[in-house]
Length: 344
Image (tube, rainbow, N blue to C red; front, top):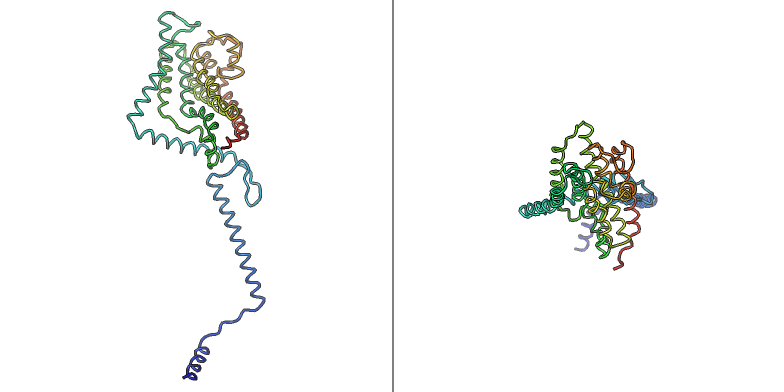
């Protein structure tokens, strides 16, 4: 039996094809090749991962890929920030519109509260015919430009004054670890759609002024109104951002910021002739809030500005807005770099 089993096993071994034995050099080459292939796959995976991370919006001011510096693209950074801002705003809008009745009531309440400012001016004119040499429709033009521009800015960037609270309690750190620009997150935080009530009220007053004023309207004067509103919103936005940057250092300076934003729009709702010239110079050359409404509005009204300036200065609000936004961006960048967290 043992002999038979051995014979069967020998026959089976002869019938099966014998695998060729590798040459000694081939083994070394194969192992080396496998190592190179694995290394190549690993490097390709790292590169693909780095590109994927970059495409998803993770790049910092100076990125690195496989130990090499990658040039920073500011345009992609700005596009990324705008996209993130839009997504956060859309989230808050969906949350707000879940309770439509509440949204309608808070919007109407916001419109009514801000309308009291103009009602106060109207009550003044029940006792006087002019205020600082300006009639009610003329002041309505000043009021409408300022209120609409500030309302637009307050809608888009009104949450910037909360930054000081985040710096104090350390919740700003949660924004820093997210792959989204911090400015976009802070600006869109708790986006309040009810603030369109302020914009609506400003537009209503501006419409009343345009309908009541006896002005020879030209295409240039008509164009100046929307350009002034947009430029004024940008100037107010720059003040919001610069004030928020100051809070990185002061930590509790929201009221200082509000004195230039909310206080600034209240200042611009009245004619410049009732204020001291030093104050008028300050809001013209230091904090250029005069370009939000006074200078363009006085050109439309055909009135002289209290501070001697050439007439073409009234057309500078877009350039002033661009300069203010650039300076505010530098201030924000410096403030963010100086941030050292709470340590807790």
